[in-house]
Amino acid sequence: MEDLFALWAGSSQTKEAEVNRRIELGCAWSCVVGVVLLLIGFWPIAALLPVPPADYSAANIATFYQDHTNRLRLGLFITLVGMGGFGPITALITRQMLRMKPRQPTLAYLQLAAGTVGWVFLFLPILMMSATAYRPDRSPEVTQSLHDMSFFILVMDFVPFFVQYIAIAAAVFSDRSPRPIFPRWVAYLSLWVALAFIPTGVITFFKTGPFTYSGILGFYIPLIIFSVWLLAMPYAVYRAIRDEVPPADESSPPATALMPW
Image 1 (cartoon, one colour):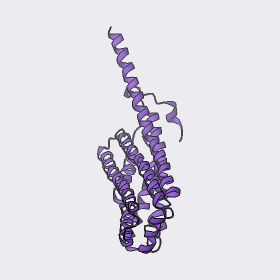
Image 2 (tube, helix red, strand yellow):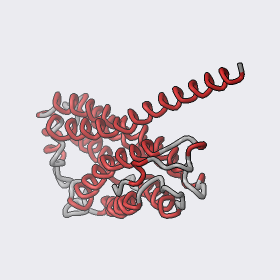
Image 3 (spheres, rainbow, N blue to C red):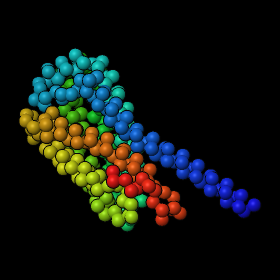
Image 4 (cartoon, rainbow, N blue to C red):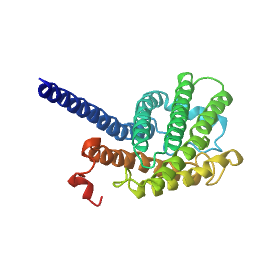
């Protein structure tokens, strides 16, 4: 009877672990789907790439919203849905960071807190742009103010993301697990994103040039590197989930753990 109970308990735990694994893999790849939706909504549908220049007059900004009203409404809705992929990947990164040895709970929860704050600031500007497109016939000066505020919230709030990526990099460099949870390139990529975000903090000083919210250093390079990170991290998390084994089996690493990539 005890043997039967042990067999049943082991089978139940195996099924539970498999369900959790599938959920985590689904969450990881939801980030990739989110990036695709985000770029499709923001770029070809909403026509927000290239970004309207920061030195556009109030009349030019108002005309942009009036000429693209329905495209903006649809594209921003799709972008809003795509932003949903950032939360699951942040949660998964936290769980994997808690597996590192020595344990780094402070860095893990710092990453979670910073990522959660960053997630909120990804939603806010999209909602504000949608509100701007809701009444495109309002005063041009009001439309311009709402537009500026939207891009300032979207671009200038680099601090939570900077903290998140520094926490990830520090944890990866500190990991001394027999099979490191994340490869070292995750740390270097996270540092690269963190550094790329720093110029976005000075957009308040410029209306022309590369440091504006429509400039190459103020917007486009951070956007490209951020997109690379959002596509790379699901793969890194996928590898970590794939290579994870039950505590009782940790002494025998899976064959996939020996793969160099």
